[in-house]
Image (cartoon, rainbow, N blue to C red; front, side, top):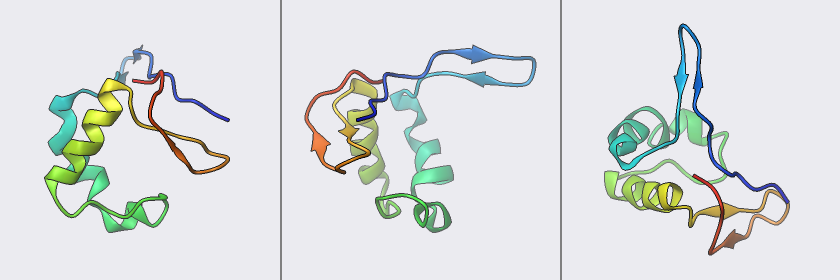
Length: 81
């Protein structure tokens, strides 16, 4: 089973990768989670409303969203970002 334990901060001259935060909700919706083209390559369908993205982001940011890549089952607790 693979567990996502968070994103370390990675910085280069051209790139700054950091953990997601709730302030990223609108961008995640606009540029990723609502895009039908991207959802073709994801397990879950594209989000239709910002409320769906907000709910997903809350679980992601507080660490309660986890999926097993083996079984596809959701777990209620996780050590992720």
